[in-house]
Image (cartoon, rainbow, N blue to C red; front, side):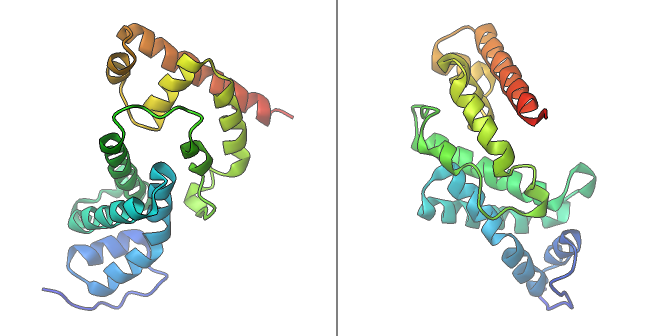
Length: 192
């Protein structure tokens, strides 16, 4: 049964999901308005294709609305949950579109940070992204590819080993060494 509730724009995300779970159209409208730019921006940043990003963000909303009743706040925030759903859908679409991994210097890196930063996403600001991207560019090519495939494309060490035609131990080492160098570069950047 669909009905209209008494939700306003100040209601919490969790309350909106509860309303969505019982079919409240106003809760759906507020939720979509609140998240449409973030979900589209994330998909656009990963995919670089506005049309596909729109499709992915719509699919993300459909999944969020269908599963609103099973959201568990103990496992994380609504924002994290919604962005994770969107990220996973975008990565899946990217995998389908690109059988061959993209070089780390590709345009995707220029679009990783949206210009519309929400408070929950404040960690991913240009102050952090620029040194990180600079450090990423300075990694040896093999480590850079492994880090990008693991972190951006969500590939496991086993998948990277197959794609790169290397032993799984080598893939794990490249990821570990690359991530350690990135952490060090960001820590050094933050040190006064």
